[in-house]
Figure (cartoon, helix red, strand yellow):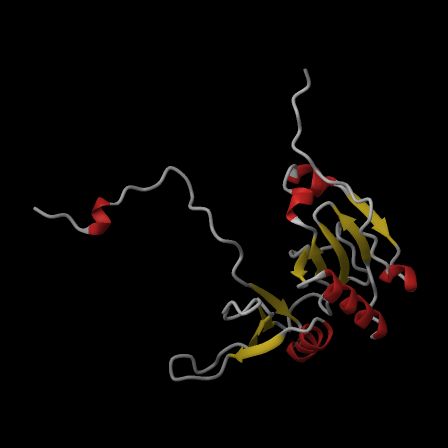
Length: 201
């Protein structure tokens, strides 16, 4: 007697490792306000919006946005859902100690040059730089959206810089200025390279 394919499968001993996060959905107080932030300030493009259909006559106010993946097809990276009942955002953004479920959202720019251009654009628009840091694997700027969600804009350092010891790279940080011309300077000389730890003899 033949068994079905599903009956023959044996459950793995552990969870299957995913490729990564496919997309993120955020609750926002005002869809139009957040739309302007994610398109005009961060440069995402709107690719879709929920509309009434016979199957869903009263959809939530929800829009979908995509970045640029260098020709790789992807439906969306971020979605925004309007929820007028959200509490007001914090008066000052901080990475820690703020009553928000989302700590921050990290967005990769395609190159160092693109990242520097984006920083100059944000500064020209009067966007507050909450935090500028060099991490061991990225150079990063932190800002916040109208709902208080932190947004990290980064470019990745070469893999050979951090892959030898990811833990050490994640623990390394160099705080940098957040205002004026100094906030737009990106030093790439003399940065640490993280090597595998060798056992002490």
